[in-house]
Length: 310
Image: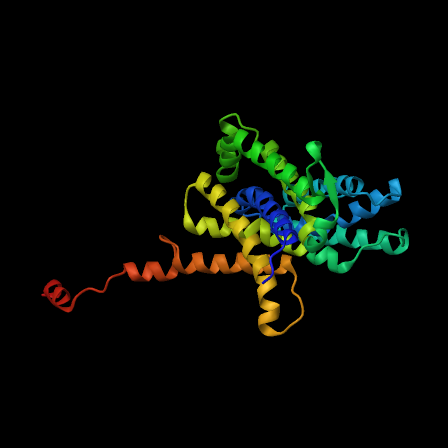
């Protein structure tokens, strides 16, 4: 394996992306809204197309704003349909994101043929190419633009969660109790949805719409198997997310030569690495692991069993 500077930058971009996703993902998991990231990642397509139609530009900022606005609207529409239509929240997500995704496709096909969207990049991202798009910071620091964007999003997520941790925790576990204590649970809900939308759009370019779902859910689900304390869960999920990025890119470099195959996608291998970490926790977690739970159940000796029965 020939590790180069570009590989380090790809891992940094992947780790920042995964860590930024894992923080709001913990609260999505606790709210039983794990598929909201999936809904938002699909529904941002009309936002991208409309932003291009209005501005005529494919700049990252324009696309980011358009996609983020539609991402927030996805959460709002889902909440409205679920509340006023008395529909299950999962069904409301399905209605909203499929409708918006279809609208996005119609806009692109009939009104914006000039929009250049690569289906492969939409699904899997282009994390291998992120080091090629660079930005120069003060003091002459030269870094990938995606790393800067994702670092800002990560810091925003971290700052908001640290500032409003009590409010977010109470709203996630018991919204009615939170409201009775003077916490605006509805505001916390939409704030979390905004974080998810902005994070999903920021991660969209690096890892694509499919892999971002894994980064939102799998590291928090793995951490949930290892601890019951929310603060520890958030910290563990970010560490596991960064580890998945490192393992994923390493596997993407090692596996193709080992099996004499063509190159693999780093984003896809990040999802695989996150899945393997979840499997290890599911089997070996100290309290909830399948193997450790069975090992704790010591067999009762025969003589003790006979004494009890007599």
